[in-house]
Image 1: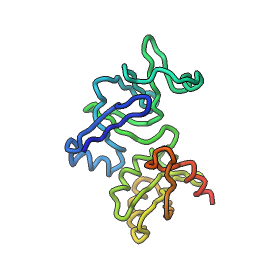
Image 2: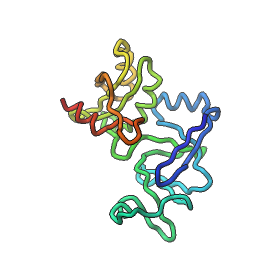
Image 3: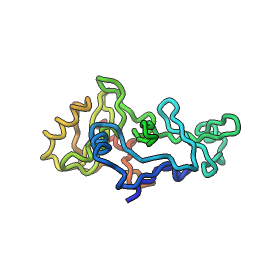
Amino acid sequence: MTCVYGSTEAEPIAHLQGDEIGAEDMAEMAAGAGLLVGHPVPEVRLRIRAGEIEVTGDHVNKSYLDPAQTRDNKVIKGGDVWHRTGDAGRLDDQGRLWLWGRVGDEVLGTQGPIHPFAVEVAAQGWPGISRCALMEKSGEPILAIEGTAAHLPTWKAHAEAFGVDRIEVISALPMDARHGSKIDRVKLAEMLKG
């Protein structure tokens, strides 16, 4: 199994072979470190600015047809055009990239901001969970879960360790129309208002 991280404008950005993920990495993901996606590919230069992943390289898209999108998503410095991925993350001391979720999707918990992947990646290892999303409801973090509700007491105990006191079980989390593999956070936010 190979994990490839990238975007339409820059594919690939990083990759990781499944057998490179060690027990320590799995423990870190279960403890809230986010999603490990591996070393940046040699063809890109990658940096983290204000928590956001930015990349430049020969295969990275330099502009859009709409100049406003170019202004919003590109940083031009010297001769380099850096693509703002919109993803939050960090590089570890081995130079590997960890994803935290989309910039702006973090929610404020009692101990400060909580990035979605910190909880969501960990929760995928909890019993009975099919899908989940860390959201905000009434100014508090909430974990929306699609799964077997019989595990609710276990989920609550795990979620509290991340500073999330509220769980809402939803029969089917909405998926985005474009990918069909990502939670549609806009639709989910609307569902949680009700």
